[in-house]
Image (cartoon, rainbow, N blue to C red; front, side, top):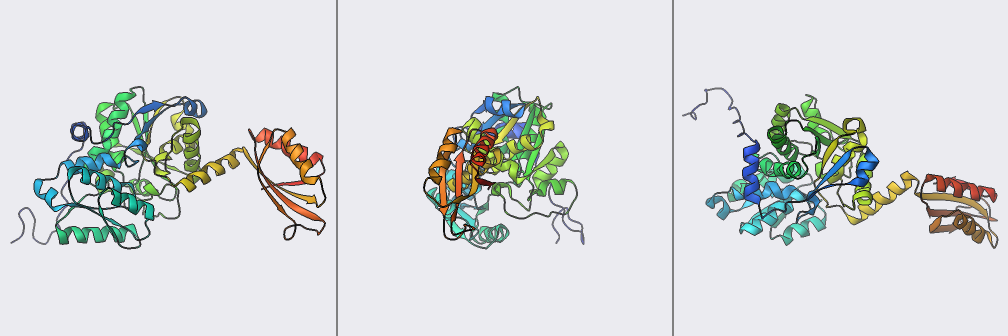
Length: 417
């Protein structure tokens, strides 16, 4: 017999997701109270001055696992039945969702399995295992890992905890906006990073009822604008390297997609360079460390100043799990772009006293030489000359120009690197 409610010969229509609104978000907030940190919302004077708007930062990078994902994981696991808890849970993730599910499963005494692609960095695997989860490495892509996770869920009777396409997860993520709007009622607009869409959907649902005057923008990075493309009815075309790997998603959630359409959330797509600049600005102006995805909200303020000028902007710093080497490179690249790190190449005569003269000229102009490379054998155009490469720390581009002028006054040929 056919199942009740299905017409013979007709495909089954997917069940409509349960409503997600302020009531569901407040219920989620009660469930996760004490299990998830209520992170501070701070107004950053330095960023506000630099960007021409009031910038409020919601610091979810301070969560135990370094990201907002704990909110949705804690709420979803709190709703498991006794049978589901006894059987255990499974999730697919190469990053923050993995640690969030592992941590809260351990807290509740639930066995957790996390499927990760084989390319996942060893540090992420180790951190997930440290929360007591069984880690299974499978597949070369997230899609292959997800397929295997679903197979294991069926085979072992495990409950699959989706990172964003689950109403309970979405409601948990939306508690971020509740806290932010309660702690900073001056906020007029929200800038929320978008990967699969769970966070922005939950935040938009809360804002729509709690503060309907607040405008919500979702933010994607230029190589992965999947949500923007879906909302515009375009085919999804994404790919390429990005520092915002936490939101580098091809397949967005169907539940978040429907919510964003209903709530009229607009998408902003930011360039890679704006994300790097945002990471550096958060470090320098707010003393806050953010991963690429966590800095995407601020990147939108940088890339679209006309949307935020003169307004009070709530920025979700939703994650801080950035590799130390990548962070160092981002900061150095930003110094070079701002003209505060000067890289110079000089062809110099190979005779005593030349290096001393160059160092004296740089010092007299107030520069600080932090790296020197002196090459006689291979790079120099003549056997009687040498190539000198200098890395110099300066206050700003004007001081850098003064140093170049001082060197050229000594008859040195100078090229900027």
